[in-house]
Image 1 (cartoon, rainbow, N blue to C red):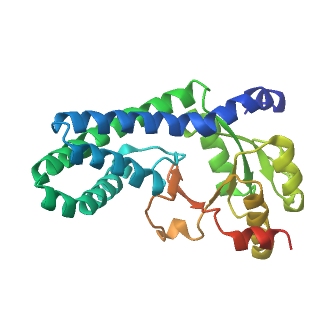
Image 2: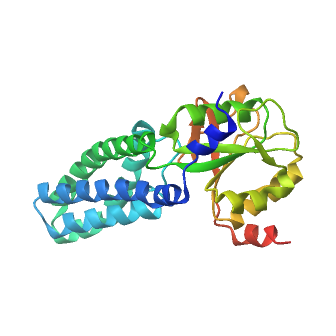
Length: 268
């Protein structure tokens, strides 16, 4: 087990985690753009094929395709990518029928699906490599120092490809933990500001549900990524989707931080 000084030495600096916030999505966007342009070129550079490539990129961006998960796996993302590329095709099909460019549109769509899927394998491999090289790391705090929280912390610290480096726990009781307890849940605001955190993982420790809800709202105000370990996941009660990650089999649900009402609740 690393000492506290060793843990601090491994914690990424501000420049590293700021870079992680924009560089990883930029890698994926760039590879997707190249794949879409190559597909349009292979389809004959027809106007509708070029329009499809542009619309496909817009659809992917609007549907949060460039949110980089903790566990990036192309196999999980491919069905979702195909569905959104098919939606872009559906939007342009009436125009293709009117202009007579349906064949070019279908060729472009077929090339896009194949090249974007291959490109996603490449871009996620690059992201994992950059994380292991400590280029893309984000300091993370775990709310809850119980068995699940400790297991997540150890997994994140042992495998840097997750891109989340735990710096400590938020809990009311300290014990034999692999990282220090930074404070209790009432001090979450101070902890988030002091350590300039980018991720919080809620592992359901000893806090009551009402306190956890307040913690969620405060985290929203800091504009950070919040992940929640679902209750009863060990009984097989989980679901899949673009907002679901996992760390060594422990599912993490990403909390969407877009609700204005939630932001206002956090200040009450």
